[in-house]
Every structure is written in structure tokens, then in C-alpha cells.
Image (cartoon, rainbow, N blue to C red; front, side):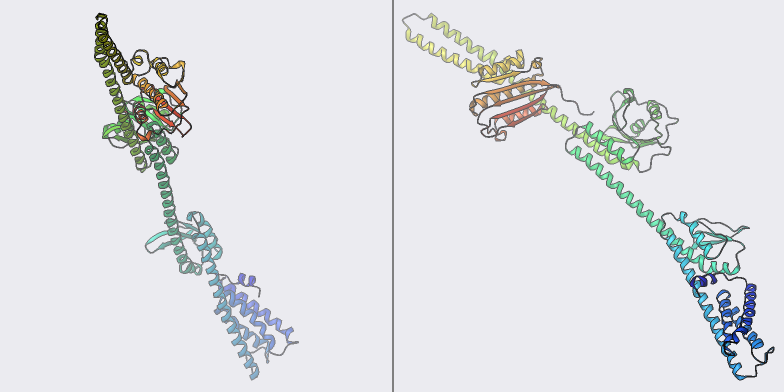
Length: 615
């Protein structure tokens, strides 16, 4: 028999027993009539084997017991209609009795084998059902989405009009029977089938299908929970890695001495990248009772939106009052300029953390959201790391600004001391020497002609005294040039060029005319003076080119000679002191002096006061 035909005959749910009786009777009648034509071509007993077909069919479809009944009825029909004497149950011939006994044994054995085959087929189909349910439930990312397919597979396998599976407790009703699906004491869901299902099918559902379905559903739920936990862990690890990378980039910027505005912009940019569409803000408390925006990822804000008074309800006001992190889940009924700005920008909720610098509340790091739901609970923790970096950048800027101011004060104090020394020498010692020289000149002029030797000695003393006065004047110029204080940098540099033993090509930008701060002019003067002195004493140069220009609030100096080169500021020359002086003013001095290639000094000195660190 074809496998497909057998599978159609063997069904999990047997047809009604009365239908089996009718089919058995019909098959026996047909087989009884078929024996007549077969007797002409077969032996006297061999045609009875055709009854085995009926026994086989009935056993496969309706089971063993109806098959046994069919076998007995087939034996009786064969004995009555085809074993002499015809029409009765008496079988006088021992050979016919033996034939009937063999037929009955074969028929019963066939019935048993067919029923066993039926059971194996049903078990195989149940295994297929379990395997299909396992495939659907154990490989699904969304259990609820595959439950309809599982229910359809159960209905098709058990020949039900329909079935449904719910992940909830559903009671019986007048149309459905409910089978609870549970693992131990845990209720997983409910299987619903029509109420008119045969008892045999209900028993099969209770004993075989429901336990397997409950176990697979429990395993699917555990798998979904495990996958969800793994996915959450992956997302958490990915988020943590992104946060650490962002913190690392900002920390590197802080460690490299980045200016506070650069650090602030980096913080708001990185926070915006981590938190998605949320807007990020860094706010500073001002001395006049207002709060100002020092950085935000939003663009296009108006000037009046960059600073507002601390009035009404706002994140900066809450942080200032509590010195702790604060959050607002709604601005609908809030008052004040900050609340008005939040509603204008579509902000629905916000959180803020205090930025504390050396024990002082400096400002607020805030994150705002336009979503209707409040900010997630972990937002404060994600912002906290950046708040620490902002505080570190501000403290570092304060320290660097204080150090730069201290160095600038030292340079200014040294210049003032040099100026006092120069003034004291000019006003006291130099004037005294000039008075003595005048007295010697008067004494020399008053001598009689006969005292020629005395006149010659006075003349020599007067020349030595004039030489000493000239040397003293030169010393005072080196300490603090009077011409620099009187006329500014250009006249002082021209005087230096005239006195230099090496020819100097001086190029003064016309924009260098206006007076600059004294410390800047003094520093520039000493840079040029030291460079000309080194060119004459050490470099053996034949020409020096000096260029001076002012651009963008910075004085630029370029001094190049054609000497032997080889100047090294690290060997403790006067260039080291000049470099310290210029750096103390916020400038920079670069020296290029290859051996045999001359020396180039490039100096930049800010002419405006350095910007103050964030307050």
C-alpha cells in the first residue's frame, strides 16, 4: 500500500465505531462475492485470503478490537458461503477446519500488526507535532508571534476545527474548552479548543499534547528571557564602552591642556552622541545672580536665550538651592525665564548635576528631552563622569591662569626693579660722575700754563671719567633703555640697530606704531638685543634681518642672521631667560639654529591681556 494512502487512513482520531462496523460489513460482503469468481482459477481455500484485506483496513483505521471482530466475521462468512455444505456453520472436513483455523490465526495476526502499525504511525505523527512545536517555540525571538502557527499545527494534527493559545489565564466558555499550560506551579498560558471535540481527542490532548506544549512553552519563555538578558547585557556593555570611549576623548583633551571652551563643547557633543536626541547644556552661575550658557549642542539660540536670571522654577535654581542633582519631569506649570525657554524649545523634562570646582558651586551640566515621558532613571549616572571632567578642566584652567598671572607679575616686578635701578643710576651715580667731570674740567681750565704736567694728568683723569660715564650709560640702557620708556618700541629698536656692530636690516610694520603694554615692549626689546649681541659675539654674522609686525593682537618678531649657527637654549644661555620671559607673558619663542646655517628666532607675544579663566 502506498505510504501516502496509509498515512491518510491512519488518523490520530479514529472515525466513529458505527462507521467502522458498516465498513467492515460492506468489505465482508464485497469480499464474499469476489471469492466466487476467484474459485474458478484458485484452489478451494486460497480465495479466502482476500478477507485479509478487509481485516487490514479495519484494523488500521479503527484499531485492533474491531479488526478482530472483522476477522471472526470474515471466517464465519467464508465458512457459510464457501465451505461445503454451503449455508451452514458445520465444517465436516478436517482439512477445511484446519484451513479456517489458519485463516483465523493469520487474520488475527494481521489485525494485531495493523493496529501496532497504526499506533506507531500515530506516535510518529505526535513526534512530528512535538518537533514542529519545538522548532516554532524554541527558535522564536517573539513567542506571542508564533503561537498562532503552533495552534494551527495542533488543530491540523488532531483534526480540530480550530485552536488558540494565549499567554494568559483564559477560562472555559460555552464555545471553548480551556487546557491550562503550566510548568509546576507557574501558569504559562491556556490552550483553547472547541467544546464539541470527541472524548478520545480530549484525552489525547490532556495526556500527550498539553504536557509537551507546556514544557516547550516553558523552555521558550526561558530562552526568550535568557536572550533578553543577553541582549540587555550586550546593550549595557555597548553603552558602557561608548561612554568610556567618550570620557576617554574628553579626558585626553583635559590632560593635554585644552582650553575650557574646547572641553565644554566636547562634553556637550559627546553627551548628545550618547543620549541620542536629548539636548545637552553646560551652564555657569554668574556673580550678578544670572546663569549663562557656556556650551550646548543646540544652534541658533538668540542672545537673550544664552543668559537669564535665576527666577522661578528651573534646573539651575534647584541645583543651586540643594547643591545636588535635580530633575523636572514637566515644565507645563513652571514659571520663570528658564521655564519659558524650555517650553519654547519644546523641552518636556530635564535633569541637572552640579559642577563643583574646589568646593565652590560653579555651574550645572543639564540634559533636556522633548519626549513626553520623563528622563530615564540612570541619566544622572551617565552625566556624572563628564561633570567631573568639566570641573577638572575648570580647575586646571584656573591653576594655569593663576600660574600665568603669577609669572607675568614676576616679569613686571623685575622690569619695574630694573627701571628703578636705571633711574637711580641715572639720577644719582651718573649725575654725580658728570658733576665730578665738570669740576675736573673747571680745575683743568683754571691751572696756569706752567703747570703743564698737572694739566695733562687732569686731562687723562677726565677722559677716564668720561669713559666710565659712557660705560655707565650703556649699562643703564641694558638694564632698562630710557628711549623705550620715552618713545616706545620702534625708536628703541632703531637705536639698537644703529649701535649694533653687525649691520641690521630692520623691517618695522607700520601697524607697530601704537604703544603696547610695557612688559611686552621690554620683552621684545630684550629679545632683539640678545639676538644682536649673540650675532656679534658668537655667530660671527655679517648681516642680521629683524622683522617686527603686529597681527590679531599678537606681536610677531623674526630675527635671522647668517652666522655659524649652533645656538642651543638648553645650555643655559641668555636665550633661556628670554624664553621664560616670553612664555610668562603667554607667548612663544622658537629657535632654529642648525650648525653652519645661521640662527632664526621667531617670537610671538600677546599684546592684549590673556583671557581670564572661567569664574
